[in-house]
Image (tube, rainbow, N blue to C red; front, top):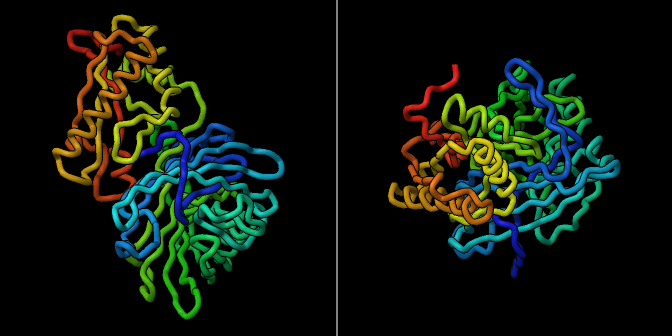
Length: 381
């Protein structure tokens, strides 16, 4: 459900949701603080669930159902943060959407702008002065932290109407928020806020989870409900960060897990939407796998593909098997690992690591694992 890097062309106006961040993200793990510096090459994976489906043929050209989008950090400097978002999904008529949209957010706006634009549109300029897309600006986040409430304005897209109102903390303290950081499950400290926001004569409820960092209030999740509904509400739309991958040497961690546990999830693997085509971004992680296997010439491994439970068993079994085979052949054909050392298998939705009842659970169940043949081999103590 991920993306490949190729030349994107969009013959009509299309909109897509994206996320922006500032200079670094302080990640509070359960027992320690983990810093994830923002730099070129870093990737944010956003899982989206849209049940506010447009009618087929309505011309909305908005992605529907469950899908993922990828935000790449392309530049970080003293003036601005630049990102590129890519998405593959389907619109209300079932037609494929292929998007690539750039955005540049000014430092001054990251510090104090009062308006957040959540989505990037193909018709938008790269820089929209006076706005952020990282959630509340530092100034708004400071008010939420010290006062417990703050005035707030938001647009789903730049061309749409502004919703305004007051965000109020739903909890006096922080709440846990789980994200995969380079394939490792990490618990972040988040501020939970809600608000009834008005646009025109309509009001709809919103809820956001914001990273509890005074300088970098990253939007971890947002959702909104139907017009006129109260809080708590059933979301019509939810977008959540489920993975953060950044340039790092993963070889040691993978080798250690394969040595001790005989199994490891491969971080940084991206596929096209509902396809088995690898995004070239995946080659960095596959190169790490190849280096591990080169250092351990006696190891034989199986590549296992896994999916969520959306769709039938036959479809998911086939998709997971094809993705596992694609990874295997990339290791053989591009990285020269002997095919005799590799096997592949697809397990569909039969081996979930989390519940498929949640957006983040389904996202984490879509994965590729590497399993070492440890039969008859004594594991290190």
